[in-house]
Structures are given as structure tokens and as C-alpha cells.
Amino acid sequence: MELNGNFPNPFNPTTTIKFGLPEDSHVQLNIYAMNGQKVHTLLDGQVSKSYHQIVWDGKNESGQPVSVGLYVYELKTDNKRILKKMLLVK
Image (tube, rainbow, N blue to C red; front, side):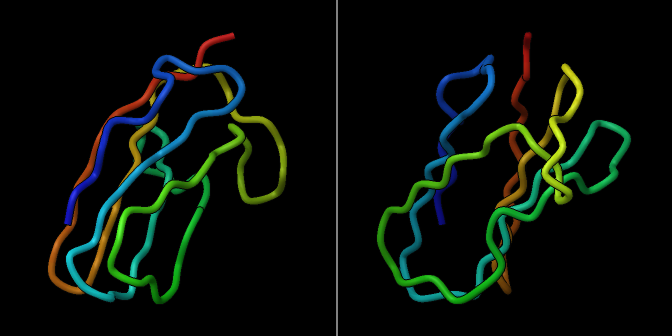
């Protein structure tokens, strides 16, 4: 499993997260605030092996824009978890 840095970073208002899977897997892609609170789940389901990209629009689960600041994105499968940081600026 591979998780690339988001682009652009810092970003406003959208950023693209790219990842690669060596095999079909159940995948979660989550965004967290620095206090550990989950802000948004971008992906939660079965994904085929290959490279993928997902755009985050800087909004939470309710569709409201999140605050400026540092966020963590997490790519998780059944047997691996990778975390990276990104910065939302205005």
C-alpha cells in the first residue's frame, strides 16, 4: 500500500490525495483534526488494486467548511495504516 502526499499542500479550498493498492482491499480514507476528532470519511469500501485519487473539498461530514489549520489524513486497510499531514490555508 502506498499513500502519496496530497497536492497541493498547503491547499485552499481543495486538495487531491493519491494512493496505490497492491491488491483488492477494503479501504478507509479519513480526515482528522489535530485533536484527533474525525472530520470526514472520504472513502469506506472495497477498492480494486491500482492507483486511485480522491479530492477533498475542505468540508466536514455535514458539508460545512472546516477551519484553517493542520489536518491528518489516514489510509487504512485490514492490515496496514498510513498517516500524513496537510495544511489548509485561507
